[in-house]
Image 1 (cartoon, rainbow, N blue to C red):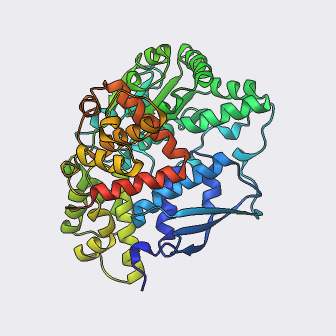
Image 2 (image 1 turned 180 degrees about the vertical axis):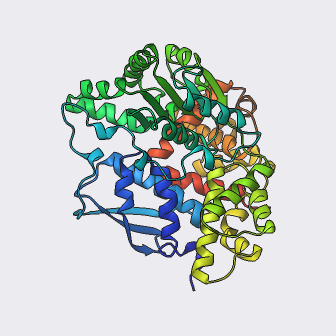
Length: 452
């Protein structure tokens, strides 16, 4: 009998829900909503997926794979290979995906119906780690363009930045008709497409006619000089008109590599506020809130089990509740501590305390895998065969240890924090675009997190 953790097709509803949550605000959201799992090959760990569309470009395909891969990992404990197949659509093409016109359609602006139902301030669990960001977000939503412009929210992945941006968006839509909410990756893609199609003026007009512009993951602008130029002038136009700008990122503006100084300066004109990982009490409150939304009753021992074992990522707490709920429904069993432990054994076993992952172990694993010598990896040499493994080791050190960027740099030949940050962001960018690298990194993480 196949283990529940690896029964991919049975867990599809939970996977789909988490993937849709990741894809909100992106054009692939509607494609994902109509996607159907066709088959799963356990031997090759390949999930075949049918998408209602005559064709998919490489950007849409990789975005689908990214959203689904991360959702699968949350639910199953591993990311299967995704074989995305297209089929003729029986549904009308969503307006947001209609062919480009000389002028941007009004549907490109956000509407309440396109936001997740729970994307508001009432469903955001406030604690010491995020109360300043929460208060600033409410202030901006109630008084746009007044006190904090721009509002810049930063912090690690899965801590609630996107939720706050969507809550701001929902509140603003009550009084402002033209609110633009978009991920930075999609903004870059739209700009590149507009350059190809000769419709830059239409895109520029759409952005600059916004009553408020909200962009998620603005660090994706790093190194994209032409897009930065366009965004610089758009930002200036909106700011001078008193229009609210809200941005999120994984780090402070000054720590985003290859970001123009003039943009860094403008991002600091308003308020930059950090979201920290939640404390135990806040994690428990988050679990209760997520369970309440799914109408699942969790005992105190189950709530404590989740809060104590999933410590750094709110999104993973939500995924844990989804998986426990799914297993309880499929098995017909009540939600007990034993069921929760069974449902999440792949995740909990893979996550010992952060202190148990040592940088020395990371370096040893990377050297062994890429067949490079330790002295060469830590040297100042920058040849390609050394630079890439070095970047991977720095990325893993940031993900799996509690070391600061400067401390990581010390381990790697005395490099400064900006060099380490540049390396980490390079791997993050490659991970989004290259499924093979994503799978490889996940295997590294599982190996290193395995209990002693």
